[in-house]
Length: 206
Ligand code: 5GP
Picture (tube, protein in one colour):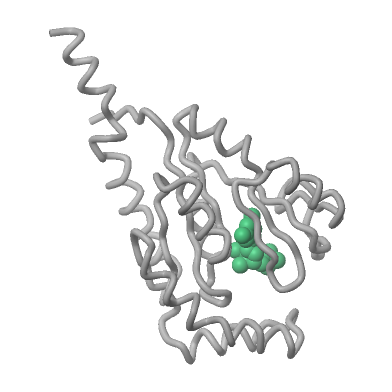
């Protein structure tokens, strides 16, 4: 059965640092190549193997601030000293074309999208346990001691904010978590409000 989506789905995947958002989203994108991925802008330096315009648009702080002032971001956040933001125009253009767009963003950013675009589908990724989350945050070699402590100190508040999302997925096993996200996407795409064209076409031809 073919459904026709009137407007695309803005799929927001968020959660505390260490829940594995990046890994889950990479696997989801392989499974669902039809998903558009919003490339964020950031002021952090590229890591080895990262290319401007592929993983991120790498901007200077001045360039980023100018874009904030111009209202160019759907959301942005200061994430442990670096700015990250979602370019607004590209996302809205793709939604108008009926595309499903994946945003992998932190909890502060997701909170702004909830305000600016409440029609989004908000999925909160949970770690299997607090011990595992701490292990993942501490285990990242890229983090300084200060940044580890900052990340750990806001985990409880971030978990609390997850209660306002639409869906929760536990990332105990990546492929299983991706199965659940695919099921959410399938159900969302069948919502009546996203498929009013189907009704209109039938009425037109009756
Ligand atoms: P990383 O520097 O490891 O690539 O990402 C650090 C954090 O920034 C991750 O939690 C990631 O989800 C988040 N992030 C990436 N892009 C965006 C964005 O456009 N907006 C917000 N608010 N967070 C982002």
